[in-house]
Figure 1 (spheres, rainbow, N blue to C red):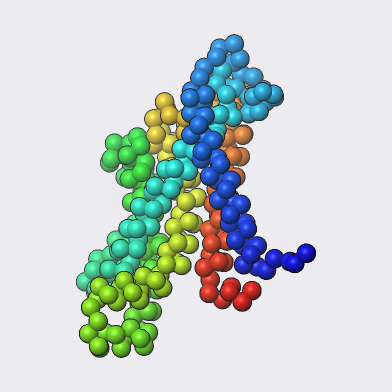
Figure 2 (cartoon, rainbow, N blue to C red):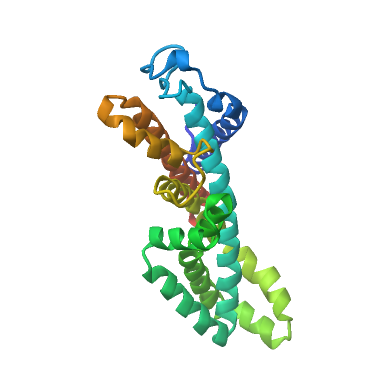
Length: 273
């Protein structure tokens, strides 16, 4: 049997991680109704069949609630990561092509990076009224500076490339330079940065919700589940926090693996491996 090369292994791992994450997202969306069901005849059951993660103080199935919370976190993470990455792309390219904009955006990047991240997310979430809109705004508007700085540096290097300098001398419009030459070169960094923003977005969404500045308590979000379970740990109901916490860590690690394999596939040097 022929052994897989590094690119094939990376592609296989990427597809496997993506399939698991997609399955979690779809399963959680389908189990939303079950996650909200209460049954006081099954209060505080320890993990066992048929309740793999046990039940809580209202008789709700913790396995269904955990999957639903993860699905919600993944969807919010996808939305906020995409918005943040597009902001980073637009601002990074604009800053690198205009000196005045560069000074303004560089100052904004330094300002955003100088504020503790979780505090910045909380402040923006509060400014937008908390809830779903607050979480999306807080995570989206706080995660763009690092990627914008990276893309800005890439554009500054590309501007000195001989073919771009020649194209400018030949009078090629700036719009065509950006569309035909800059954006294709930025695509690998942009896609990798986009994927790597997913775990950060998911963790920060769960964190601000856990602290009470995010999603409302009526929604079966992971942050809500962990926050509520803290009150019952001293009573010996360890499963209420353990399984949702481990599931959240597992999803974050899957996204990190997805980003790493995408980086390997998009690296031009890996084509010979």
